[in-house]
Image 1 (spheres, rainbow, N blue to C red):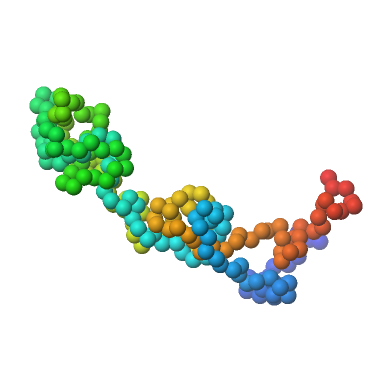
Image 2: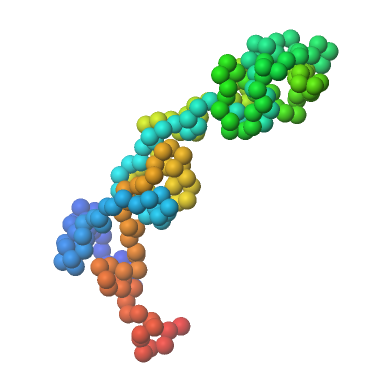
Length: 197
């Protein structure tokens, strides 16, 4: 077994103690310092504390489709043979993502609305909250977004922004190639006089 890459098994507690002793002897800090950075600079860093949502996303009931916002009750009985006609004022034109107007609880897709002047003709009834994104559908206030020690990706930063963050408490991610200023992989090949393969 002399050619084995493993010299001997070491219990985990003893291995951790040895690692801590070597870290202290080398002058390496136990943890990298934490600091606040704006979201634009957070990608690639590591969270120093859990990230919680400070607001819901979406922060209001929002239209999930382009079309008209209506009261679902006003569409009862609509069909191909008995369409329902809504006069202006009984509906509001909305685009995807728009806040739902007061008194409206459903959206009829633009493709399913037929107009005669300003009157909207509907040929199918819609249930309440059809094509409506409810408040907090993506993220709710006080929901955990990211745990401590998480390497931030662009999608994580976008989620934090949507949930109200403007800056994050982070640590610089460690660089495995260096340990306290020394190379962990041996001499620098560029400075070595021995040719590398």
